[in-house]
Amino acid sequence: MFVSMVISFCPRILFQCAAYGRCVSKHAEDIRKGVCEKEFLELIACIRKVITLRNLNQNYQDHTVKMKIRRYKKAQRVLSFLKHNFSFVAPYRIVVDGTFCQAALENKVNIREQIQKYLQEDVLIYTTACVLQELELLGGHFHGALLIAKQYKCLKCKHMVQKEKPCSASMCLQKLVGKENSKKYFIATQDKDLRADLNEKVTACPLLFLQQKVIHLDRLSQVCKEKADREIESKLNFESSKDTVAMLKCKLLPKSYSEKKDESFIRRKPKAPNPLSCLKKKKKNNMPRSDGRRTRRRRRRANKRGNNMNAVVQDASSCLQ
Image 1 (cartoon, rainbow, N blue to C red):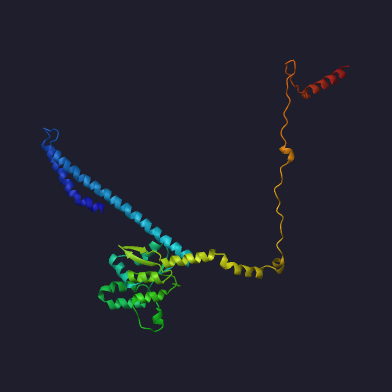
Image 2 (cartoon, rainbow, N blue to C red):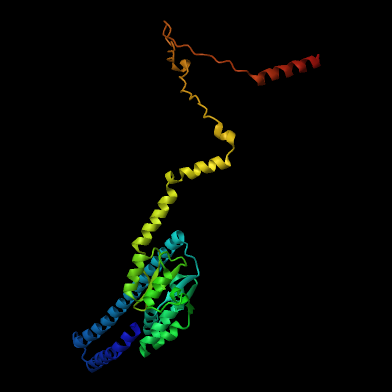
């Protein structure tokens, strides 16, 4: 994008450079201030436009990178919620309809590659016989979408198994998912009415759609969030599980344990402090003598070295005698 802009401005920049060069060469002998000011200002204005376009392109690229990171983080939050609350595991099962295949064809999007890149897990892509039949009836405009849908494995519809009449693709997908979505399907569709019906009726049915050549994972419905909250509360609520805990105690613990009575333990009171530690300290009577002189206390130290020397001298004198 930026390169094309620079190329479009290149002839103008070259023209301004040539005009400024001709002006300078013309007045080379008698050059003075402000002779080629007009040509110089036009050249500077042209260069400034190129620099502003480069900055705009850099800002656009930074914005697209940030949006891409946000989109991936949002998908990972939704997938982690589905994994922990509704046991969705990889490889994910994706069911595509005709509208999604047509949108992918118009935007030149490789469905398998882009979905795997977006969800960051392996996927299994399916379609239904009703979707293929609807694309065949729609005619030549949807022939490319029909070829794309035929690449994927075709699921057996419940109404086709029960030998009922084929229905529209939206009704077929609603019957395939059911109320609980027990087989953990992802539905990829561009039909807004179908997405709204699935959000209202199905507890956990993640939806994929295309928007400006980019795959998006739709927000979780309020029904899905409320069911997850109820299950978490039921797991954390101890009052409802008191009966089961009592029954398990009766089965697993011995009878002697249940017949024992709770022993009453005597709680020891805190002891009183030691009475000797509560006595007041005695005051020392250091009164001076009547003559006004202070007495010094003498300390007797055992002079081991002196005693040893005296013993050695006595032994030596006895030997000389």
